Amino acid sequence: MAHTRTTPADTPLGDDFHLYDTTLRDGAQREGISYSVAEKLTTARTLDALGVGFIEGGWPGALPKDTAFFARAADELRLEHAALVAFGSTRKPGRSAERDPQVQALLDSR
Image (cartoon, rainbow, N blue to C red; front, side, top):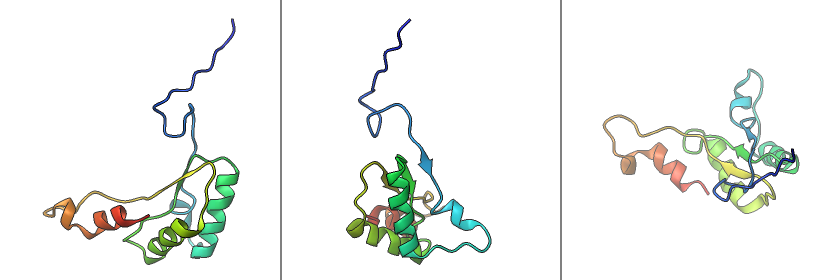
């Protein structure tokens, strides 16, 4: 029996399976690891070249280095395969999303 592969139109990058890499955020939480913005940009380029579908770049607004990374990435990264995504949290209790600086920083990251 022959297998026919279909490509659903509603998937983010047009095929069935994607890797979501958290090296730049979760991987940086190990003791003794602290990526510079330049190192994060280089790593993102490498992950893209490997065909990773989604690269979690960090938490803009919570960490100044991550905010700087997203600002530079908008100008300097030309990803061919990957989508750069941000980590974040929902609004703080008692605040609307519009008045929560963390949510706004996520929305402002480019």
